[in-house]
Image (cartoon, rainbow, N blue to C red; front, side, top):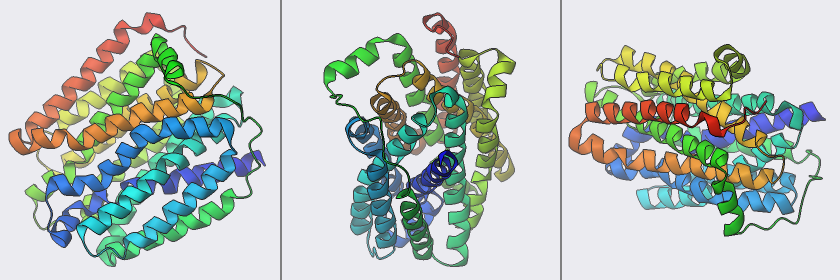
Length: 382
């Protein structure tokens, strides 16, 4: 049964992340389809990230009190339904409204998958976190590369329906997961959240989560517009191909335990990850399709080292309140993603691609320096 739960959790993570990022390779297409601006089209992703910034704390609390399987089942059904309904949207407002409704279910599914995984076996946290991250990476590849390819040979409507039906099938599979036996009477209060944030280890992990997705979204969300400016005739399939570098993220996540041993521990792995990630925006200064393609590989190596280690570290600090600590981690992570999807548009629009790349690279190198300076607050968690 443990293998079945792991299989369903991985599938759930894949389809949920696919639902989150499915619009990205189609952004130039939606600008033409709905007659909207770059700022408006980025809302298709940022509204979901905004929900992920706040909802996981509430869902984390609910998962301490209610059956995790039921939360996962209901959220996957809603995501599948809204994916199918999106193909009927004829205008920008309708499409955005449906994405807003879908955004309420996506955080529930992600928080439920992560909490289910952490309750599966507390002795194998890094292993399961690596599998979870690898699943989300594959979902990112599936949505960006696969979504762009399917849209090019058929239509964006068919792509959304196909993902919606797949999500509903995974929801049916999730029904066979056993009921949660670790429900508690924990109450979420501002005091609990403040107590967690007063622990400098949690504060450092949450800060790292915020910054890594901020830079990740800032780099990759605006790349389609830059490549479109370089080649106005580029297709959604070709834009999706740029994201093929995500595949290396799967390998990185699965090898993260070896990477930690090689560099000498959790904190050193985080520092190395930030440095590798920081090099990527400098590569992206070279305005060439293949250099951008290579830069995505570098981005994903650095990003998923940091994310995999941070995700396991937050679950290793304490054995209690998994739902709340994971929910808070996801809240900070996706708050960074929300701001990273929107705020860099100001830099990109007013100052150009070069300034945006230098800005992101500076943040990443500074993050590596911060983790180097604060490593003493951690008692290395094994």
